[in-house]
Image (cartoon, rainbow, N blue to C red):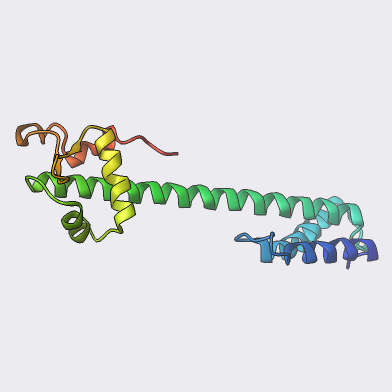
Length: 166
């Protein structure tokens, strides 16, 4: 059972977690976590079955906040890593498509890669900066290396030249 002050703290935390800026994976469950932490802390620090005091609830709420914050950070980190892996895979696929044709227009490449034009241009710009492809005078794109050099700079080795994003 909660003391009146502990219940007021928990109620305040419930209201805080319901606000629009309190969005996160565990935010809706945070008050439940805080209640469970309070029970665990109370049971492990006292032999009595008295009410849970406000100091225990405040500690439990602090733990819940930290867990929610760290969980959100870990989830964002995982999502970011996944996105950079996807980008690396799309870049490798585009480089293979460009090398497979003698030269290709942006439109043909966009159709074959099934990408939005702005995404395609960003990836091609990255490949141009890395020296893997270049734009011809007529605006078509071609690989910067001859077919004999493709083994050395093949898509399999693209991970060696693309910057890691962590």
